[in-house]
Amino acid sequence: QVQLEESGGGLVQPGGSLRLSCAASGNIASIYTMNWYRQAPGKQRELVAGIDSGDYTNYADFVKGRFTISRDNPKSTMYLQMNSLKPEDTAVYYCNAWRFQRGLKYNYWGQGTQVTVSS
Image 1 (cartoon, one colour):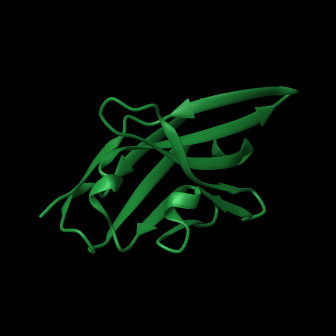
Image 2 (cartoon, one colour):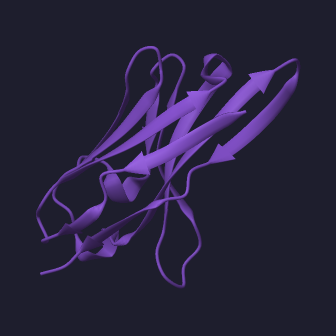
């Protein structure tokens, strides 16, 4: 099992910055990919950014150049540095992790952290 806990959300003005954290615990050694998703009211959950075990990163087009995903060693905490925030970035941000063990894939989600961008 893996437990994920997000933190760092809050209210920020347009153009401001926030840094989200996702602390992973439990069987973290077999995690191979971690992602940030977000879900705005009335919209589907969407992928924001991801990072794999080789530290390869990918980003949604709508955050490229503004957000940076990173992960510390030994992969117990993932971060999302969000700069130049826009009102449309307002959403609940979720941490997601995939674990591979004995030929099976397991998917985990955190509870989410609210990010509100407003003046």
